[in-house]
Length: 111
Length: 205
View 1 (tube, helix red, strand yellow):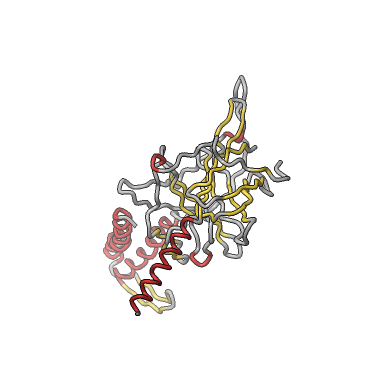
View 2 (tube, rainbow over the protein chains, first blue to last red):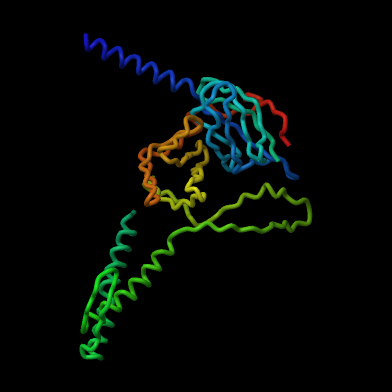
């Protein structure tokens, strides 16, 4: 009997862990700037997401790399405000994060 | 701390202890045991004479000088203001195109994959810390990103926290798991054309 309960708990824990992992996504996208010579990556810009469909608040900021790409891991599915800190208050965009490995956001041209 | 640091520290301490023996011997030979040291020192009443008194004086002077030299390895944050000017006959680039670097501190990763960085961290008057993000870039790979944090203030999402040993008193953070740098060939590539179009909200200007 005790073994059955133990196996049941392990099964529940396994299912919950798998559900938690599948429920979050890596949000990634690119920031670009436009200059006289064309477009170029916007490096070192702070980006965060702010939850609109739940009360989990704002994520820590992530910074774009030298290729202008930002990566925000472990974002649960739902609606968010994508915040690009090129000013204060930041530029804001409405995005939907899907429960899949990556949620790709199209490039954004920033000043 | 790597082996060369340990050798440096042990060597420095040995020098601090042994080097004053030379001038102490010279003083002892010249003054014929006339040197005397008496009075309070660090809460203790001391009374020394002869060569040992001279050795003690030189030891204190040398250790203070070397101690100040070791102290210079601490970092302080300075604010630097200025202006950049392009000199070009034709079209000038945008100022925002400039990517600035700061060296030192260097952030080298050793050939065995380990690293030990000195990281400047902003500290507010109330003791709150503002952590920088550490990024490691390799062509063809997703970046390795380290979000430093105080264990008591864990953010709940939007980051991948690496478990750490955190020692605020000594300003030490030891990551307990490796920073993962994943090949882009192993993951779904970023396709700008198929990506979700973000909807700009009012106020972006």
